[in-house]
Image (cartoon, rainbow, N blue to C red):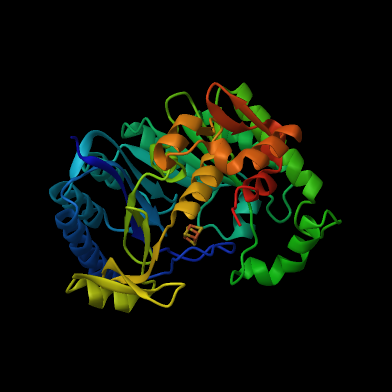
Length: 409
Ligand code: SF4
């Protein structure tokens, strides 16, 4: 039997400066903290390589934070630790997130030499005014330079991250951003609408506006609900006309360039997250690393496997395998596995394959979700065709509502 596949996520929590909308685990750090972190990270990677010798890495994703802010030597060291510790599939997708303003040609060269074959560049908007409002550290022109440099260094699989529903944005400025980006013809585009998250500067500024937006009322700075809907539809149409496949609610790719790492999440392939605050899903147990930097650095010095005491509903205690970096360990029961299969799988345009559901759970999907499926079909939000269950365009428009239907009581 071949080795079981595994995806690896590596978290780099450092950013030059915090963007106004960001609630990711990221913060500025000096050079010596970065160095200590890389040392800890390499230890963690090597440790898991020993723990999971029977696994083969099919994707590696280096995210953050701003991984491209790290000195290139650190990135080369991290990746050589990955190759030393794990079996990496020869055709593995190896991605790194980059921010314009933190990149040099030499960094791109080192990335290529270290095995990275996919870039995800955070642009968000092609409008310099909007970039300033959201607190990005770069301009459109700096992004262009980074993009051209990436192409010059031979990267042929590039994602551009975009964001709409920004304060002050209109359908016209969003259209202009999309046109500028489409002229570059990246292989992949992610387009998310802004969510005003608690604890961010934007929350203090726009929390009431966000409530008005959700309620369909007139807004002050944020686009109205109707404008956001127009922007969503415009995105879908322009990208489709340009030859991009809309393969997930917020993700578009030229044929053959869908992000394999993210598809793995939506299909519930096992993933191992290393680094501060990273999450893993291994054999249906969900692990979360500590999100306290000094605890992480200290615990990584003497990594050890142990047992996590988990109190059960019936008052007994179960013991789960864990590591001293973990801050939470949660078994994913059969019911939750089914829910996740549906509400993650249905995010993808291809939807969920009925045979796969049955193979995983030994029971037809209709036996669990018969009533829900029928009801959603009657509302024209979902279709069943060629052995797949997937959202209609109308279903995608109200995906939050549809996906919530798959939660079991
Ligand atoms: S660059 Fe990304 S991770 Fe860093 S603060 Fe901005 S949005 Fe957050």
